[in-house]
Amino acid sequence: DLFGSLEPLLPGLREDGVAVWVLGAGPYPPGALALQELLDAASEELRPEDVWEPRDMNDTCLYIFTSGTTGLPKAARVSHLKAVMCLSFYELVGASSSDVVYLALPLYHMAGSL
Image (cartoon, rainbow, N blue to C red; front, top):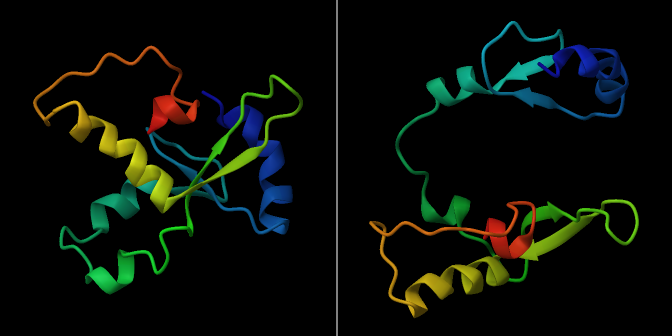
């Protein structure tokens, strides 16, 4: 549904080296990379640990974007260590993969997404 508003921006994004990946039913605008095709072609086997294991737990694991309540939205860096610490909460409270967790926080909030 949003492709129409994105299409005029694609040439500028490509010039800036920004890749636009889409997931969902096509057709896709020219220059957009169909993520589902790549996922379907990907191997089910895990790569060796030395490829995906972080060299340093303080390295960046992911970026979340602030909601912009105190200014423009901006990227906030989350380290591997912070992500693991957030996931440790579930172990602390004895949660398992069969539990259902009700999340009242928005997913763009770090405490909600992790």
